[in-house]
Length: 558
Image 1 (tube, rainbow, N blue to C red):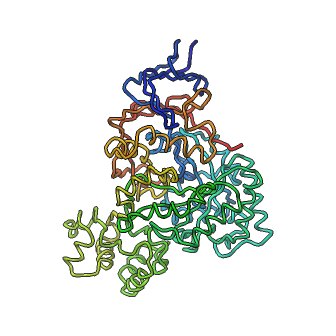
Image 2: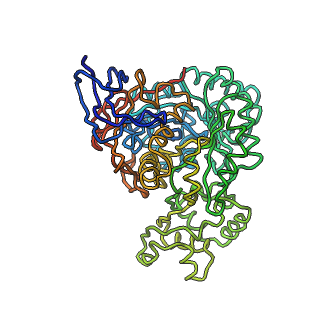
């Protein structure tokens, strides 16, 4: 028999967590048709001797909603072996959208997901209005990898309520209209809906993101849609503080499970060095909810943000900083230098906001002002000690002295290696919080898969390779109901990654590149050790180079 493609002599790790086997993998018409000793010829053969052959990775948390309109390749995710992405998370997105609301939804993305306004204005192709049309437009444009869509609640509410959506709850009639739109999206193949309760999520006009204003009556109606169709997942940004799940947050999680009778995944479960047992304690406390389908999402490495004060995403929950958003450069300079602003900022830190205690550990990465060059590589704490000043004042002083050009790196969480390793092994968590497509000049976590396999498996031996592959393939696929993805077996879609277990990795620090629309900058992480990526049976990457194919599909729930 002649096949389209055969991968020969590889160590097959099938995604089930079972030990690897030496086998060939035959592909025909985009599907795996045989695993074992495969006889016969093929139009294309890959020699995988000495390498691992495993399912394509499934990223459960991306924000590629805008990027799919200008970037078919979805870099960097695709080169790291991610073959399916779940989009539309955290209640923010760009569909559905009336033409007159495009500016509002764009500004939501600028503030919530930290994407430059100029990049979005030039890059987004508005060739849809409804959510089903959004999915159809993605299918027409084509993608290198598979796209699965969650329905974000903020644009749904904006579509029905208009400019008041981030000011009030919906009326009974408006709630019904929003629920009807959600049902239409589910009927078109969406995989559920997303929302947020996070104080950090503010939208246009520095007001709460529209999804945060949804009442319990509203949410009951939207959960009821998933309950009626008996499919779909809910994703929500939930926690106010790292290493915490407050009582009201736990109650909200239970409410969403009760109302929908569907799985719920929430953000996020980071660890802090000063609370080493927090993750385990939270998981133990909510185990009854986890047994009902709740799962927190986690990162695979320390959470480090690149930050400048022109777009201060991490101040979104600070009331004292609200006037900074959407302000001109001149106005921002004046605000940051104002002693009244600084005093109000410090007073608010006493309330335990996420920014509290961070300033002294922030690192000055780069500055433009020659007079400040000696500060590069130093922490704000060290500089403050030398200047005999408060670290928060020094943080703002340097920004003003450098005309807001200074780039800081902010260590946020996941600094306790032992606690993070334990969370990566724990089946009660979902690995994959890449945020790919968002915060483009602040972080790049799209290489979380290769980092897991390189750092945690090979270097730290925190979990076996077979277990690690299972955690980033079949586990997220099963949670979302992606029936033919995440495993290698006859009849499954031929989403396949071939890699060298001795060299696979992703750099801890990404590289700045300037390749976005309008000349925008993003952070890029180069994959190491992956020789081949196949999507739907077609070779997408070979030895780190794109083959030119665009084989991805829009995956639709059924």
